[in-house]
Image (cartoon, rainbow, N blue to C red; front, side):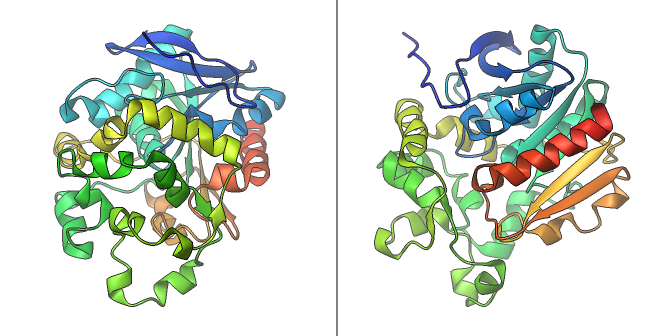
Length: 326
């Protein structure tokens, strides 16, 4: 039996649609031009709990799904069922089910990769794109897993995630501890991170999870009640669905050969000053592929931008939406 959804403050209850062979949980607020919010790892539609009411109040139809493998949405067996073709196809089917021809797509972290690819793979359904931390990056010159392995080594978290079942078990061993580790703010600035020795900059997050919790920098980015929503959900679902997205980097790279990389719709790029994984500098030069682009830098902000600085994030998105789609 499917468990009852966990009600989060500001998000409300989901409804369900059939899309691309799966049953997807969708949260909605408001009416007007649609904007679809796509979460990252290890997250949920709940990550957008501050954005849905704000964008609804600003006059838009704000939509946030639990994406494939997450929360109350189906999680098919097999890593091959989590390619970019599947993830973008899910969103196209969701639009069809909701009677929407075109929407603005806003994505953070992995969700950011999905929304930029939506504009390339399904341009007829995309009115605009908002990247939160995640820039549009051109197709890599070689297999991205091989590139990451060369740059960071075997323990870099994306490389480590390629091992079937290993990271899944490590993260699920103590779900509450895992989320206390990930969901933090106010640790190092980017400048402080860059001053560390090379062996401390391998992005070996699973190994760092095993370290003494008393030494973890920063503080929780959310209240304990909010954290509990993530913890209780992932205790039920596990982490494999989300990790399977990472297990398609090579497949996505292979399948994107020949795909034009130009994004021909209005775009907004929101960067976080102290995100050590998705650095603001990664957005430098985006204009070559995204000619209609506005940028905004959120100061003193780490990776969890829309949850760490919700008011600024909401203001920037709502202002851009009013000017471009109001």
